[in-house]
Image 1 (tube, one colour):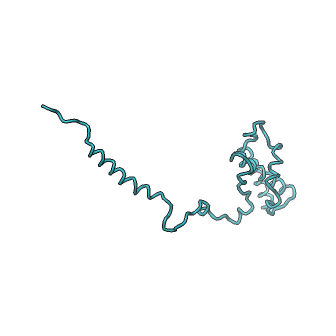
Image 2: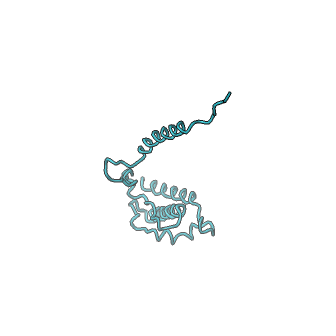
Image 3: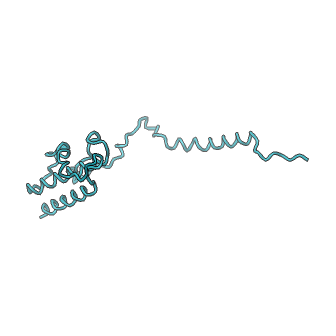
Length: 144
């Protein structure tokens, strides 16, 4: 007596392939851009509008300022520190952001440098903490 083969037939494999395609295609169409609008929306269109209080917030640095995001974030913190220090020194409660440039943050690097490693010349977390502390002092002085 002959035993039937236990391997699936070719037709069954083809059916399984068609079934998986029929399930995958509709799911793939769900992630495509909105075709009804006829245009792609840039990611920035989903950005949240800034508050009035954020107008004096140091913006993200330009991508060409430094090679890595770590360095750019450090330079942003340095600029925050420079602005807050100037506000304390001048006893000014107005926004001083327009009086500072990214070049000033680059020039101030030696003052904040903690390492000779060009990829990690400073500790960004410490710079952020220092910037937060000085900005809090400015806010306290201006609240009086």
